[in-house]
Figure 1 (cartoon, rainbow, N blue to C red):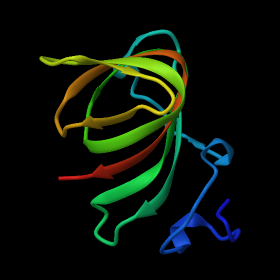
Figure 2: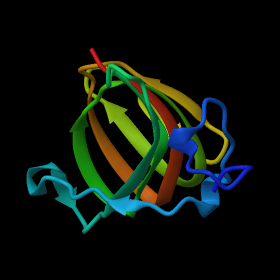
Figure 3: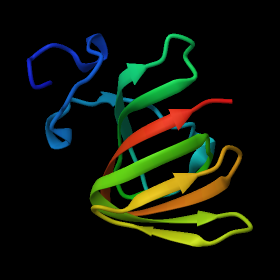
Length: 124
């Protein structure tokens, strides 16, 4: 779904319509689910040759889950959630919100409306 109909990962520069990207299931560890029955889907659009940087689209349906974060910058495309960072602040996320999570942050995601984000992750 790129501007020239080739898979994004095959291109150096690319553009995608985030709402149109077909996502693949990414099962949650049941130990992460605090309440509800959230489902996670996503798609990596680009990965560096060393596997330490990823860019893609990620989505989660309503519910409450815990996570330990990677070093990530993301922009919310649709939906709403509150992310409580252990020992820090709560982040209110909605369309157009840009956020940064630090590697090792322990978080609790309360997803109010199915949330879709475009992300860049740097692995340690």
